[in-house]
Amino acid sequence: MEMDIATLAKAIAIAVGAIGPAIAIGMIGSKAMEAIGRNPEASNKVLVPMLIISAFAEAIAIYALVIAFSI
Image (cartoon, helix red, strand yellow):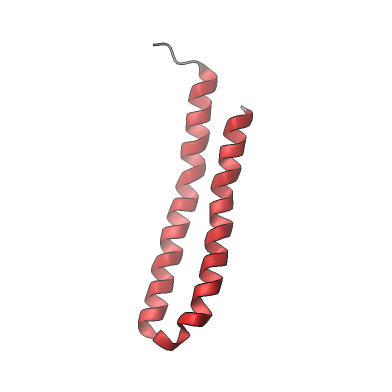
């Protein structure tokens, strides 16, 4: 079971590219829940920006996947 270099490079690209967005999405959700917990009336103002920023963070992971497929 020999693993070639391209397969290893793809695995590393996906792993490294997913770590940052995963941490970012966790922090975004955590801070949003904290903000809503402190001020429940602001949930409508917090929810939409939280979802938009989460989508941008997820796009970074998709870029890493695209790079891995191009290797």
